[in-house]
Amino acid sequence: MQVSQGVEWAMHICTLLSEAPDGTPVPRRTLAEAYALPEPYLAKYLKRLVAAGVLTSTSGPRGGYRLAKPADQTTGLAVVEAVEGTGPTFTCRELRRHGTVAATREECREKCAVHTMMDAADEAWRARLAETTIADIRRHRPDTLRARAAETLGW
Amino acid sequence: MQVSQGVEWAMHICTLLSEAPDGTPVPRRTLAEAYALPEPYLAKYLKRLVAAGVLTSTSGPRGGYRLAKPADQTTGLAVVEAVEGTGPTFTCRELRRHGTVAATREECREKCAVHTMMDAADEAWRARLAETTIADIRRHRPDTLRARAAETLGW
Image 1: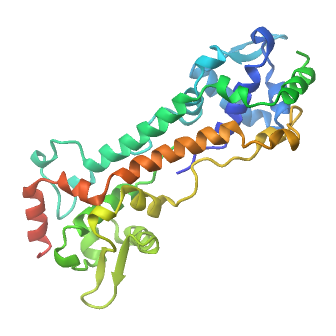
Image 2 (image 1 turned 45 degrees about the horizontal axis):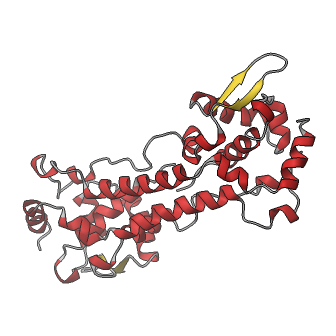
């Protein structure tokens, strides 16, 4: 089980955007260059982040992307789910209802215990991601790095 | 992020094998028919379960598969990792070291906070899977179902 590369991209992009003064919008090209990312591929993830309400985008010559909410209200879970979707990691196909040892409908009134375990693990994963915010991630960025990023981006 | 269909197959197969009297080996074809699974595809997962030490296999006319350890010592995590591998769900490509806002080597002495969060979520997921054993799953199978399975499989 693996999350896509887009999760790393999205987390760093959101952290960088959280450092923009007064939520100044940052153009897509600038974001792509900031982390040496292929712009058309990044565009796909930015679209998902906007659709999920993590980022907002504005068009025009001074347009770009910014965080939709304050950094301390933007969780790792929101970013990961924007990229990966909110669907469960496990899809129960009710295997117990098939084959020579199939359970009857009557015997399946309770949710399958395998499904229950997988859903509980999924919830534990999401709960941990919800504990960390972009503000927490940002706090780990050295001051020298933040200063250099601000200078590079003309902030 | 999704786990493969093989996880559901493997969990049900291991639960069924835990009901075999005295760990009687069950042939691959019988297991495939038990849940109406394509045998060549199931073979791939059985191989992984044996390689991971969850199942043992014996050859010969009375050969087949059985649980390598008692059901209460066979965790959901062991089964899921046998199918999905033990590799982390998140691969950090050190994105912070790239692009116009790249961090210096000096600024990267601490593990990336994104990586830390993703690893912590991964651990929470695995910890939850480790809490449930095949014996726990088995306890949820109705007696009528277990009796019918035993009769069908000649136990």
